[in-house]
Length: 216
Ligand code: GAR
View 1 (cartoon, helix red, strand yellow):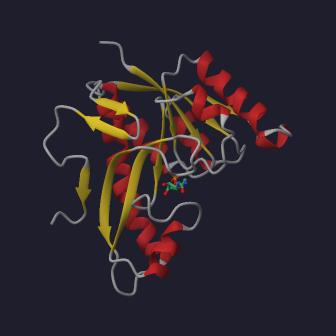
View 2 (cartoon, rainbow, N blue to C red):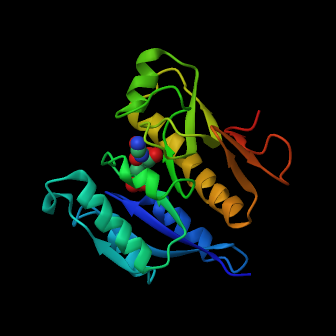
């Protein structure tokens, strides 16, 4: 069966992108990484992608006075590469409403909190400040509602006494690296159905859309 063509949009380090690239190297993985686009020329993730032999493109937001014209250029790059699913991976720009409409149902993101808690920036700091005992990450469809789209899967991690933002971020990131490739696999296998604001994942063990670390 043809593999799902995934385009990845990054702004920086690219560790989630690297996790997707690694997963897609397995012969039985149902998706392939068609290209990586960065809005930041110096994003370290670009080199990781290049080393893995993946086509990369820089679309600098600084070259665009309007958000939507930047978005349209990024979209055109993905179309040129035959992309069927766009995965945001540490993409730190707000998209214009046009982009999630253009890619409706084919645009996903990984976010380092258990949404709908802690949207926006510095979410691990927000979690520490709120005193929550659990945090984690969420893979969700992207809509025009910032960090508000339908949830596909989540992973929960404990927030431990004395945690720093760095320690909590690293604990969550390890789960992002498990969760994101798992969700892209499900999408590639055609198991994921979006109906309105709810997502159904067919044919996986009950509860498998929620990971725990450590396992309870
Ligand atoms: C990740 O923790 C990702 O969830 C977060 O930025 C980090 C990027 O790391 N994304 C967001 O906060 C988007 N709202 P990476 O570049 O190493 O994948």
